[in-house]
Amino acid sequence: MAICIGIDAAKVVHWAVDAFISDLRALKGDVVIGIDVVGSFARFIGASLLAEGFALLHTPGIAVNRAGQGFAGGERTSDPRDPRDARTVAELVRTRDLRPVLGAVLTVEFLAAIGNIGRVSSADALAAAAGLAPVQRQSGKPAGWRHACGGDKAPKRVCYQSAFCAVTRKGPLSKAF
Image 1: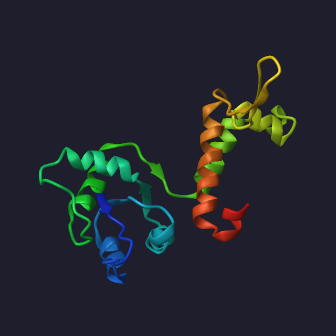
Image 2 (image 1 turned 90 degrees about the vertical axis):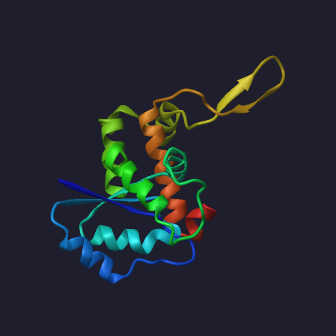
């Protein structure tokens, strides 16, 4: 039986302590943990849980907000001691197919989306196939560039997600790049 745990990561105060991981290890059953923030201020708790071998899933904040509106209990608060958002995260872990937190997962998804890397002749060709490269727009004399609307969605999603991870997890050098 899977035990679903929800973590509402707080920006200022973290109420979870080292004993939290010990308590999780003592549970009988498969423990699956959802967290509403990946990286930034939740990096330590996420890394600690992953290092201990727990399954960690990302529950996007907008999903938590929308799902929370459907539960009884009135308006949401920003109080980190309020368990309602954590309960909502746990409920989403139990009922939805959520994205795991790990760079290895993105690598596997990328390899599955591309298949044989020999299919593409260059990084530019890959960007064009994924719909990431700008497209020239020209009608008569005025010319310019526009964002591509098409492309293969699987490699496009992996590229966007990996760029997001790089910016949020790697610090100022990735942000500058």
